[in-house]
Length: 303
Image (cartoon, rainbow, N blue to C red; front, side, top):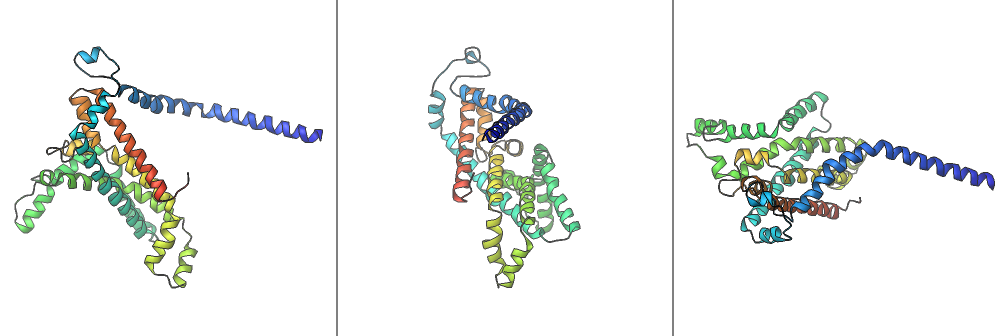
């Protein structure tokens, strides 16, 4: 009995020692997380309840104003327009665009030879690694009144040039973001699809299952976790897209592409109302949290 107690005490001490060592090794990561993530988040919440500004009397007299920014925000018609534009941009760009197209490309590449996969992969990933501002200028040059696309259209059909960025601004930024971001989804799904045992699909084929039934009953359920994770990551990334939209359209024409990040920027750094801008940023955070919860709930993924 004494030996058993001694072994138990020794095991507990060793476990405690291992936990202390692990905490010491992880402490730099925790410190970085605290300094560069949690601290700005806390400051954002605090500043959203103030009259923080870049210029004027408010810039020198910072004061707590309670829920005034939020009252102003919920009475702001432009905010509701920005929320609607943001949801449209996320729906077509992230969910129906990047995720679906990324899965389709990964699925079509499954089982192909290494050279073919490498060529397609490089072509798709090239857009992803390109800086966002470069992508934006490239698409402006492509879709502009005298851009590449209009030159092709006029040379083939003879019709007048189409002002894509003015007549179809949301379509333009959605297509540009899909082109740039699809590679991330493709790589995530490609890894998940490659992990599906070939024997499972072969057995289903032998049982007479059609291609669609295999996708619906085998492929999608086996990569459900990847689908959820990818949806959350791509959605959160798309919610924060600013440079691409601001460079291509500036939020216009009018308010046609005025998503929440662009509207937040205008209020914070164009109108110099930092307090109001930080309050708007909390709306972006809330929308991201709602999307994440919905994904986990409807796809029934345990965390």
